[in-house]
Length: 247
Image (cartoon, rainbow, N blue to C red; front, side, top):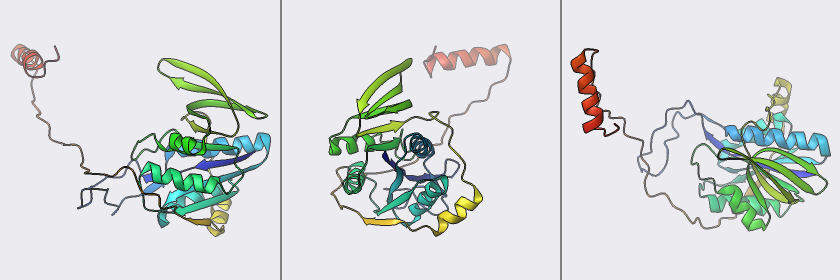
């Protein structure tokens, strides 16, 4: 079984984000970028499937030069090859086309995504790739098993679980908790730094979505400090009823 794991580079969740002067993107100055947390489970699931069924696991990312770091993380975890598609586009449609262009040059049985990227939260790339490949897709997968050419999955739905089955080749997006991602060992990290990445150029498909503006949430709060006297409690109830209208 040949598996393609699609990964992305995102800002560290502990990084303080600022908007660039153009108001269209984040300011990368001082921002630490990491492997998208959901993609750790994607890589691990690909590796476990390879251990059970043989074949290869290839990692791919679409992004600038700095995104090569996450490919080396994937190599240190154990993937066989890593593909870097050079592109600065953040539009899901153009990124999906870059991934599909790579898939069409490989013999891929299963394309794996993380549930979502934690930066733009579009939830679109996995479904778009499946549509462009004309392959079935199952999202939010919390467990899966491959038997021959069929894939049986369990996915999270509101208030429960849903069991679904499809055939290979297909596209899946996996959920946090599907496995416990392994930590790369220091020797593997050092070896990964010397590995050669497969470089590809972007397909340069025209983006279909553009950012009009970007801004951080307002931090202003109308804070009112009250004590614990009966008058304060009465005033709190009045404010919740009259102004906030929550009671």
